[in-house]
Amino acid sequence: MNTASLNLCKELYKLSGWGDDDRDDLDWYRRHKDLETIVIDIEMHDSLAPAYTLGYLLRKLELKDGWNHGRLDLSHCADVHESGTQYYWAVSFNSYDNDFPVGEANTPEDAVCKLAIELFKQGILSKDNKEIK
Image 1 (cartoon, rainbow, N blue to C red):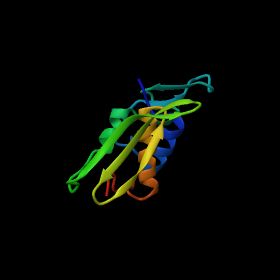
Image 2: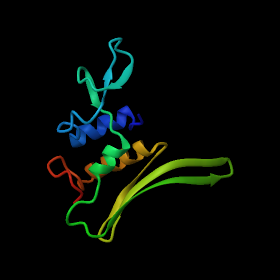
Image 3: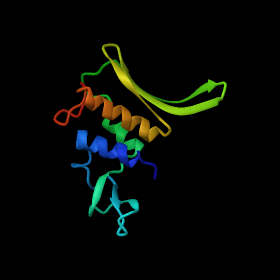
Image 4: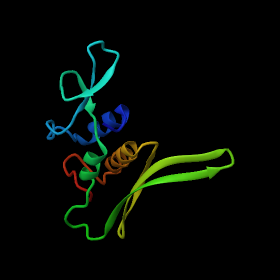
């Protein structure tokens, strides 16, 4: 199972609370009994943060009522330099009314998680209103 990284999941969980209402639908990062290994499973004991999957994050960011013109774009990109080509994932939400931030990372899960974090930080999303404004 591919998930966003632990640090990004922790940050997004702190900002959003996503997972509190979905405990049965998410696996969680937690410390293994050896206390040094981080594992992902359904047990809540010693949980650190939800293990957000790409599908879960995209559904949380889907367009809601009131958004007639908008698009969530996820792209695999390549920047060519003299030293070589750098590949990365980029995600953005674009609308005619607003220009939202872009999330970039080495995995699509981390890119979408970064975008969600930035939307919360900028007040576009909030814990009380979890839909894009």
